[in-house]
Image (cartoon, rainbow, N blue to C red; front, side, top):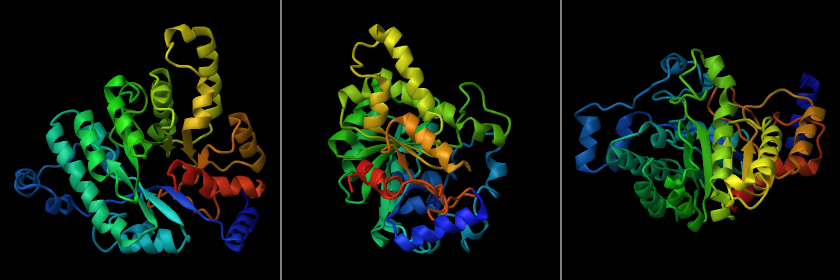
Length: 361
């Protein structure tokens, strides 16, 4: 988008004062010691005495830590996203957000392939930290429930905090395993029963290529859609939406340009091979339109015509949601993200209405 078009779109949004829901905000701990007040004596000593640290597995993870954020998002102490005051000022106030959805510590359910008891304790502590330090301080903030990978412990945590009025979804990391497996269906049942959406977000601690870790950050970032495609296929073919037809899933920070391709690809395979999955009662593209939504971030600089053609191929204006990815380096402002030459009704849906539907606001 050119500079003049960007300014025009910016001024238009400001003038119209459109409602905005940001579906991808990363808040952080200032340190692991932030969890200690919310842990039992049994578990807190693993941090205070034994100096437990999360396992970082990607070869570029540590290199990226100092450069993956906005330069102006660093508080006086702690990493970007750990200061409520700075997040409130830079995101909520400066962008006039109606709501912003905090993503949470979603990698807990991917990295913890064992020692589920400690993972469950950390997830509970993080949820309590999020409620006290963020949600209770600004009603514009909405929360995501962090869960461990173990379904029994996950359901227990969903039931524990799922009734909080600002908790709107259960966050799952797009990991090296497929969430559609029936082993994980109790998680979907609990979320559906509690009236919560499911959010899926990629974690830097996993491979996205279907094999070993990619060698470079640029390669890993380019491969994001592969991981989301795998999860979409798994959810549909394992009958998640046939079991829970009212369940909604938001796919966050995975882009959206690949969605029409996957809708057509799955429809074609289903027509030829539907006898393999008799429990799947509808065309895959129907589940996309009725049960899934996709965030705009990471946004690509495409023309209005190109953007509208993607929406047309989706066959629905109700599938895209705005996301900023604050406080990361590729932050997208709602004032300049969308192409200028799109219908007002579509702009309102992407900036607010579609996410409001997902989160039942």
